[in-house]
Image (cartoon, rainbow, N blue to C red; front, side):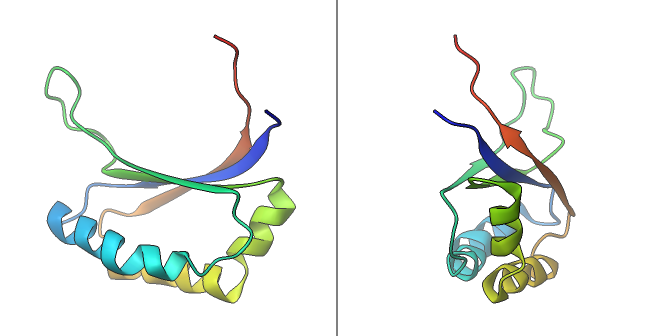
Length: 107
């Protein structure tokens, strides 16, 4: 599999996890689904560690394209800007954006 370029969005613990989850699923995803050019999109809600320690982040989204230039086109599109502006409506714990090329390591 060839490398893909991605942005990882880490969402800090929100004021209300129930409100965050509901808004993300029912409102933010439909807004973000208007973005064209993504090759892959994954999400993950984090669980506590085995010892019960709460996770530092509540949720993660990863958006994939073939290159950084392609990702920047997606994020700078009208739909990408709308999705970014929507963060203020639900990401009460903040959002961290991390950009990089992903590659698989043989196991």
